[in-house]
Length: 227
Image 1 (tube, helix red, strand yellow):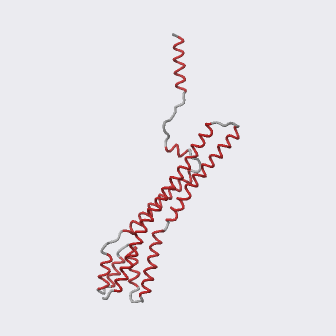
Image 2 (cartoon, one colour):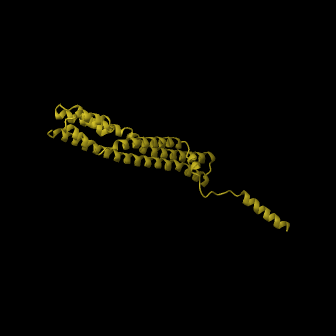
Image 3 (cartoon, helix red, strand yellow):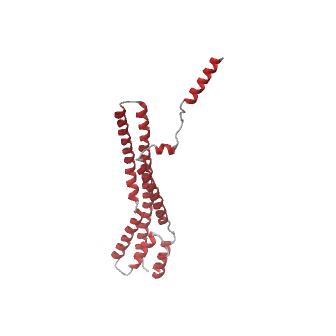
C-alpha cells in the first residue's frame, strides 16, 4: 500500500512538472518575438493606414459631383449670365468647379488660351489627388524587404549561438527561425495591404480624372455654341 502511494505521488509530481504545450499563440506575443525589425514594420503600417484614410477621404470628396452642375453652367453661359456661373463655381467645392471657374475667367480670350488654362487647372487638380500616393507605393516595396532583413538577422543570430555553444540542436534552430519568420510574414502583410490600397485609390483617381476630362470637353463645347 505504501509503495502504491509512492508511485501515485511520483506520477502526480511528474504530471505537475511536465511543460504545458500551447495549442495556439497569442498575436501580441507573436509580434513581440519578431525582434527589432518589427519596430520599422509597425511604423510603416501606421503610415500606410494614415495615408490610406487621408487619401480616401480627399478623393471621395472630389468624386462627389452635382449632376446638375454642368447643366446650370451651360444655361448661365448661354444666357449671358457669366457672374452667376462664376458664383456657382465659387460656391461649389469640387475639382470640376475650380476647372470650369478657371475657364470662365478666360472668356473673351482666344480659345487656345481658354483650353490651355483649363488643361493646366486639370493637371493641378490631379496633382492634388495624387499627392502622398507615392508613400503607399514605397511602403508596398519596402515593408517586405524589412521583414526579410529581420529574418536574415535572425538566421545570423542562430548561427552565432551555435558557434558560441558549439551545440547544434533543434531547439536553437526551430526557435530562432519561427520567431524571425514573424518579421517576414508581417512585412509581406503590410506590403500587400499597402499595394491593395495604392491600386484601389488609383482606381478612384482615374474615375475623377475621367469626370474632369468630360467636364472640360462639355465646357469647351458650351463656349463653341452660338448664344
